[in-house]
Image (tube, rainbow, N blue to C red; front, side):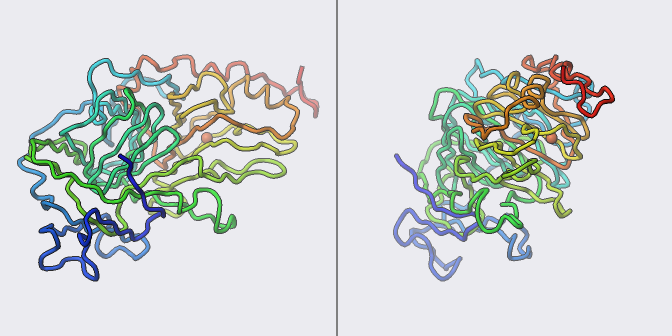
Length: 437
Ligand SMILES: [Fe+2]
């Protein structure tokens, strides 16, 4: 089965699976066609300004009140929510991990969500959490929605299928998807095992960054974002719906599939994006811009230019700058940086930071190229070089990222990460040339 998509970012989309199932000229006719129920899904307050006002109208077999019954508590102990402070005894530091191991037990996407950091406060709808998912089993009759935030999904191993109430998104490594807060979905595995990263955004929705003097093109372009066309199932068998709500999990049993939206229109919808369509902009003569030049999506906070979350990628690109230290420079930052590597090699750390791995450089903790990377870049002949076979990314937030106990105790944490800078030599000897012996 192939699934189709509509191009554009934040468009006012419309889509129907059956002819005439989408009302025209009105949202809530007395009797919608096919006996469907009309229901609004609000992603912003009714009175939000036009530019940030988001809602969709869903025409479904049953209204969502029929897709929940009485709730029972459910346990997903590895999925943590901010504030989650004082959870471990690991000392302050820069941290790096090898990939989270694949599960040995049958594990679906929700059960396989392992939180690495949390930041901010879900009750104040600020901050985020960074997770890794690992799964080897499709969700069949189980469904999920997250009231705590939207989910930015970054696959690293294996393709998956997000079967949502607004349509189906097929996703493979190299693509990302964003599932809005409250959207009901289940996750099917296309490949046997999957792993990837998730940023759970408690705050204002991810949007495209302003381009400023760059102009109207480059970086991520709106038409490369793809929103699924409507898709539904009419399935009258026992199903479950798991809800994440203010950090706790609840489950409810129903007698049918909640994925029953026959038609919808609006601008509150899931989407996917192929990172290969990002057009990077960079240095043409010397130095290089701040990594914000590679921002794909940003979730604003109330303070201008101070993001709740920036999603930044480090894609293949040409390095041409003259008389320039070309890798990322040494850095201390008020923002906190969670990095992952989808495939290939990252230019500031050629070894140790492996695909599926994680690094965490938190509020004001120093980081930068390792000793071999510094040596190489300081002595390199500065010809144009294509940085190829690489796709790293960063979840960057204005809030400090608090490590979870799971991450602190994860056996793949590299206890010797700090040693990657041990061999950086003192070059200062009082001469203008410095000591490069
Ligand atoms: Fe940094």
